[in-house]
Image (cartoon, rainbow over all chains, first blue to last red; front, side, top):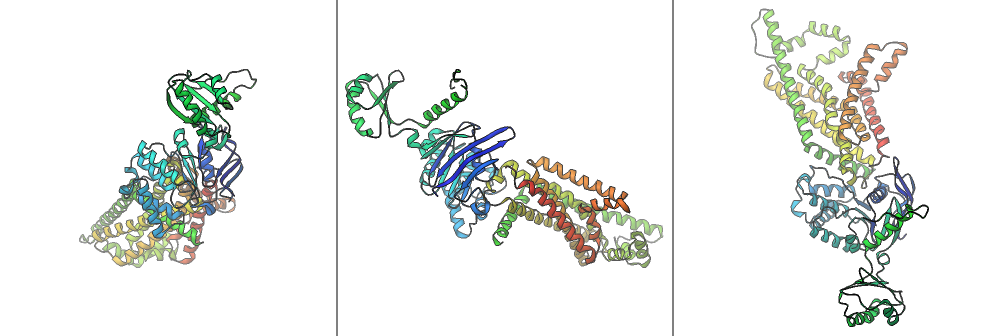
Length: 324
Length: 301
């Protein structure tokens, strides 16, 4: 059993709206798993179903090898940071975490230490006795993140965890999530693709309740087979490059100032750079930046465009609408 | 078995603390306490006026010793005979006349107004957490059944606290304003009535939390709670008016499914009346709670 969470053909209907339309998903154990999709794609619904807050209409769900969510089996092993949910306004910060911990079966000094550590972790130690209603939005968000890491859950579901955090806190939360890599499976949904790119090792693109693609981040952004050189002026011609460095697919874009090399696994990026950089320097192209692979946003937009164009072109005649 | 009880205990403790911290519950609780004190004070004033009038009619000197005439009257054989005739049941009359008048008044007050207090404070407790989303931080940690029962226990504790405080308020008012006052006998009788009113109100609490589990918003839950109170009062009135022999017994049967049908039995002091009433009320409480849970356990949150 190598997966922390599996969805197999999961369907969820809200009235006429089909939020999940046969979603398939496999979250590997110990991975940081990113869920990417447009608004209403089904990310939040998928997380709520995994945590037992929503009931699917059909499909198979396997949570940590124990079937669908059951409080008796999964309490303390699965946690969730729900989106758009509010804590009880009159509760106190520390008291609330202690309460949640006790419900998970924790207790004694272990729970107290765990709560202390979490409050330190999210910089709320000085507000431990404060009522929730006196906290700022960012502080409440940090508390919500802290409660999701209470105990040592095997699966943590984080729905838009970085929303409402200032840049410093967001960077810190990213680092903290990365530190947990390998210890527990963490599923993160976010519209900030750069954040996901910084923390995830596996990514799933979800659109209209279906899985469009799931792969390792390295595969998605082609970090092993793609290098882009950002130049001030266009460099040697594609013919010259192909002649001098064979076996590589070359492409100029962005008014000729962006040179992309696509190569197979037999060629290493460092060997390629050793050949290309002298050529570019000789041709006085002015190297501004060398970027390995694509980025998540580009790949997501490409996939979105493909999926959208397939859907809006039933007879193969209509052009897909341009992306905004 | 130990684990669920522990969980229910944690939820109940948190529920009690969280509930009595809310401004709404504090205000309603204070109003309830003030109402209890004010009603007792009014009762004592009315008693004082009646006694003064009675003494004036009899041509006796007016006494400032409020309650002394009533206490004497309460113990007189002729008054007891009259009460037995009025109540129509010698045993019930005997049992009621053994209770100090102020405690009897408190009993009436508690039976009449605690259901309203329950509807005001408890109907929104679950629906509010569903509406605000705070339930989503809890229901992946424990089952919905344990959460619901924990909330019920917490609210039942809050209700006991409210009844106890109102009894203390009424007792202190009596102590200060009634000169002919039996402190111990009145306190014990009031505590007994507070306990009975608590058991009676548990059925309403079950109803309130049953409704709360059905609703997604606190306002709807509150409105439905009051509609249910009104429906019970109407049903009770219709049943009293139309009950009889033959098919009219159906009214009795329908009425027996509401808590108010069992209130009269709680006035009795003997177990033959009390135990069936308590069993009925607790069963009703459980039925209402589980009826709400039957929808709550499979609803989307």
